[in-house]
Image 1 (tube, each protein chain N blue to C red):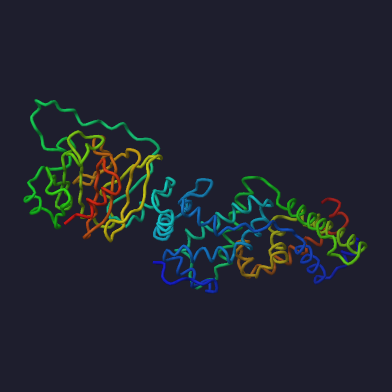
Image 2: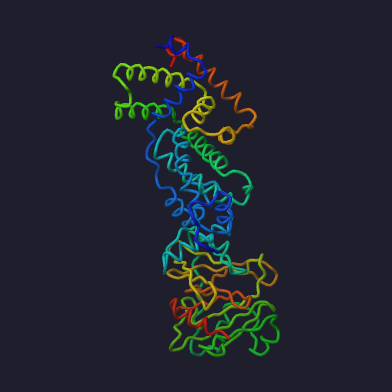
Length: 278
Length: 196
């Protein structure tokens, strides 16, 4: 037998190998298209299975993620990596959403007694310089938007000409926001550039991040668990704010602005208010 | 972003172009097109169907992540197979597994199932023995020799694809393959077989 094989010509040896190869009973090829799609939707491209970082092409990945989110319809609990990936291409300038394992315990805004000197809502949140609405409009480098559903805010704070926060006190239709007794809703408007992160959300594992539409714009709604909040001050330093609102958050872009609406309101109500911005 | 519906008959370059623009369906078509060869290359190296599935899947995901640096005029399949082979080798190295054992099992199993493939019991027996001798000889080869042979004769890869999968220059594929065949031949000697 082996003797015979030893006399094989090259062509015979090659033919024997091909014949051997033809006998290999490969297991049935699994439907990888489906599993790859599912993995990409979960942001698996960020990490290989052994945890090595894989260079992403965020635009493409995010498109897949968004497609997956759309397919899933409403809420979709997505993996930490997917949150990261979504954040990389939220299409929302100045916004980053980061997965975090644990959140710091928020320092609640001090409870004020009835005899306390009345302060404007949100005063304890270090949102910036308290400004009259007209002053704020004058100082800002962009046209301030105000939700007509709520009317003029109870207070406005300016950080710099590119960032303003409008605060609405709690009222019948506006429940108190989770971590601040004096705030029902906080709307922050940024005129961000593409490459800067003005604020960052730390989204814990049990929070939900879903894609929504705000008018014609794409937005994201974070809900289900408090999320920590990072912001960058005027000097560019990033802070983790331990007292700031961490309720449900709607993020979207409009008129070249990045907008953030935080409150205890649900998704639809948040969107309704967001869509009333004028 | 999705544009008009894509057809499965589109050339690779077109699908890649769409995938780069974020069209996930386009990449899905590429996966469908190459999943079999990717899975088999992974299987030949990993020797386990489950591992091969993971490897091929990861390879596609890495390919997707790497589309940005892929030269669009280059052929996709060799590039993909290179990623598959690298992934499979890395995993097997860390798992310390021997792939050719599974290959043998697969070949044996195939024989058991389709014994009627041979014209007569006698010639089937002969083929069986030759096959075992060949497998034994392949077992004794270095991995790169065994892979060169498997890519060429089992999976029918082109020289370009072999070069990418083996991680060598295209000009050296022929010489690598003939060297592998020569070593295989050496192992077909009684001494070589006995050792296997």
